[in-house]
Amino acid sequence: MKYTGHVIRYGDNVDTDVIIPARYLNTSDRAELAKHCMEDLDATFVGRVQQGDILVAGLNFGCGSSREHAPIAIQASGISLVIAKSFARIFYRNAINIGLAIVECPAAAEAIAEGDEVEADLDAGIIRNLTTGAEYSTEPFPPFIQTIITHGGLMQAVRDGVL
Amino acid sequence: MGMTMTQKILAAHAGADHVQAGQLLLADLDRVLGNDITSPVAIRAFEGLGIKQVFHRDKVVMVMDHFVPNKDIKAAEQCKMCRDFCGQQDVTHFYDVGRMGIEHALLPEQGLVTAGDLVIGADSHTCTYGALGAFSTGVGSTDMACGMATGKAWFKVPAAIKVILTGKLRRYVSGKDVILHLIGQIGVDGALYRSLEFTGEGMHTLSISDRLCIANMAIEAGAKNGIFAVDDLTLAYLKEHGAAEPHIYEADPDAEYEQTIEIDLSQIEPTVAFPHLPENAKTFDAVEKIPVDQVVIGSCTNGRLEDLRAAAEIMAGRQCAKGVRVIVIPATQQIYLDAMAEGLLKIFIESGAVVSTPTCGPCLGGYMGILAKGERAITTTNRNFVGRMGHPESEVYLASPATAAASALTGLITSPWEVMEQ
Image (cartoon, rainbow over all chains, first blue to last red; front, side, top):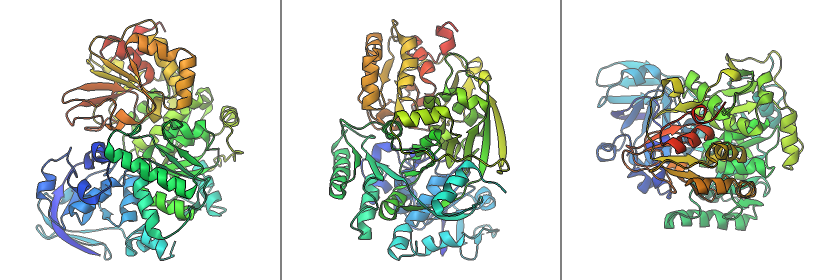
């Protein structure tokens, strides 16, 4: 799994209410959710996000509600990968379950700047900042979670009878 | 190495004699819960699996509580989808308008959770049932779908933080003040991925209502679950509510805890969490006179009968301050009825408050009390993130029912100690 894109960067404790405000939870339509992604944190996000961009954030990304609408909105907006210092646990499992790539890497999340071009190879456990040349290593996912990821999410893993 | 309460419940549901922190396992579920926001996504995923029947019609619970009675056409469509699905699947525990309540107040009240159960819910505050000695945790809609299909979910066995409670709360101080104090101490990620296990002699002095409130907000410290040791009060509550036979799990004496926190309940003061994180907890020595536009007393955190009693005691015979909109929301139909029978609703209405049908409504900025730009509310809900109750430039202050009621009377964020004799 390799991802290359430009970085959009936020701070600590980005919560699910700003990722997708509850006033839009009367729908679960992906395109509709994408239109309002990050609206209360950064009204410019939807206008500038490009397909394949990488989101970089600080501690406890995705804290708050269990709404899967949050990782869905991020995925549907075109973000290919989220790198954070840490993730809130429900967001973490939701992202894995729906097949949104995420990785915890405090060093990378600290150093990578807005607009940098980043390449991540999660199988090899390497994140490269193509703009600065810096390289960071990441922990591989445990085999059980790797199985869900390689099947493209939890439902396909269930369909394929591996769970 | 011994196991924590949480680890024992997970082991028992995974058919394992022993588990340890960090281990991944697949566990059997006693209940799979969803609401009108999260269930539609789960239903679509479930139907995509091609599985005809939910794993157990008695073990799936669906509660229409977030946007009901339907606030708009889209919300109505979402509820209809849940209603149709539960009809087709013959789901026993489907709670619609007229029978519903806020899910985390409703399930314990209806006896749907017992000690030792393993419950997942597609709602982050599912961790509430830890108050009854169950392992319960919030998940997303895909986990709910998988749970409805297979009766199982994957878990990483959590490490734990032990919270030892001593002493006894002072008058007009409640479980809400305890949990805001704790989150203030450890931060919104202070218990990330871990269990918060509450124990110590002081826990026996806490009512079930206070314990439900404390476990409810474990997620606001990032915890996977919050859980209380089972005592006589727990067993009496479970019996009274017709819950299934409890399975009592006790932490081993040599269970490993990453951290131990002691809280002397007698030292806890009325506490308020300032915008925009629940960890911004302050006691009144550090609180200025802050005017509020709205007060909300309700939610899965603080919409129980005991909460309404606490608020009514302070508001009885007094008037809400001019210009303050006060909204009281009993969390279930039963609480509504009990509050009516006790005369609490009359107290609220005579003081100038409105009383709403049970709903999550304003807590998440859904409806029934949305804030305009620049407005400020003090509420008994659980989150004060940016835009949580309405406009992104509005503010939410979290507090106990007693503090919210005192603030309703003055129009300023006010300690109940200031308006009542101690």
